[in-house]
Image (cartoon, rainbow, N blue to C red; front, top):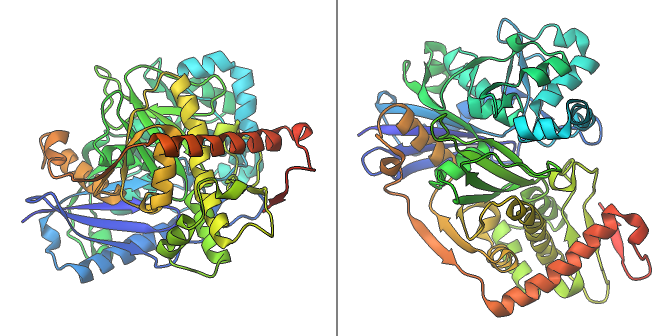
Length: 508
């Protein structure tokens, strides 16, 4: 029996999954550490993690996987990696990390991206990059150049988080076209490096690593890494992709019109198109999808809400470390609309759907005589859904079809309240599948290593476990609640329209 191994490099934890090639089923999966990894913020709006910690948890997760399921490492046919997008890891010539990684929810580079958007021209950026340079990896690198020039001078190559883990496995500094696009280092019109943006920022092309195909043998496990992990030297690393392109891939979302969603620390809806698509205000973004080729381009239109599972996690600490299942049960005891209580879930860095406006989480309409813990828990889950729906409307305005959404049976989608609110607010059919990001990375490794001849073969065993349709009565209730939520959002962005006498609020 052969196996495929997938690693999911998240900002909360590292997950490892082992798939049987014969059955296509996951035989074991583990997560490390048992508590969420720390995100440090020396300044409000910053977010950093140490890449060395990710690697240590990859080692720990691999050891846990071996303890959970006895397998012969020599039978692992390929290793795949998926990772938190948009992060910046800096390596010197010796391959040493120069500073903590500036991760996806760090807001420090917003102004640099805004300046580039204006200087290069909004139309030019949207036509060529499909995005504003915004707060993406290229702009984060510009921040380092301007604020840490001595350290910048020591950079040999930059890496995305998954590139860094692949480097630890193979000793090779590489990235992919999809990875370059997520950092806004890619020109869609020219189908090449975004040289104009690099020139504007004064960044040398030499800092970008070698480019390899998403599905390919990108290197082999070194003897040193194999010894540390307890795996077999020479095992091919044959797939890597950012978390959202990979989440779509893990759900077999590969063709135009197909849509995937995830609701972990951040919440994302990701739809596939075969033509360039951009939002004039760059509130949603487009990246090269994992299966894109010059002959058959596939782009992923990505809408992100930073404040998703992280809000639920914060509330869990506030209400006494209750199990998430218990929190879901309590939320279900409050009515739709939470008796007028509204949560704006924007407390985790600049939100792209709000044009990178600096926003805070806010609880609106709180009455001490009406609202309980149950109302707060429900208002939080509904608020996340409403924020996602706000972004979905932007995607629809770009021509991205939105009829059926696929998601893994994980994170916020485990909550019946969240699922019900999602389908009835957005007026979509929701399909849940028995997969996750690490399993998707493992299947990708199977394609890259030639174990599977096609995606159809790789996903032959993918199981749909639930289909949920909207219902008219609930749609009416949720959409009325959404209208109230949208008004509260307008009041937050435009304070002059806020009427303090009838809107009670607290900013966290």
